[in-house]
Image (cartoon, rainbow, N blue to C red; front, top):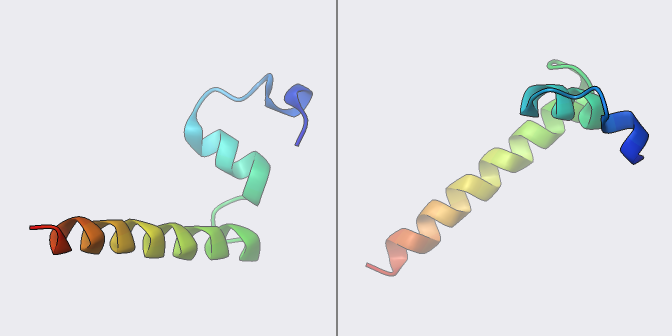
Length: 50
């Protein structure tokens, strides 16, 4: 992705649309699932430190 592609992006959701496609697309859905796995793994890592 080039900087020129990002000039008209106004928020994070638009950035995700540009990079991974609209919500419901295969690439975006895969990104969302991987993001959730990452968040859960970080929560578990923090919880294990207690």
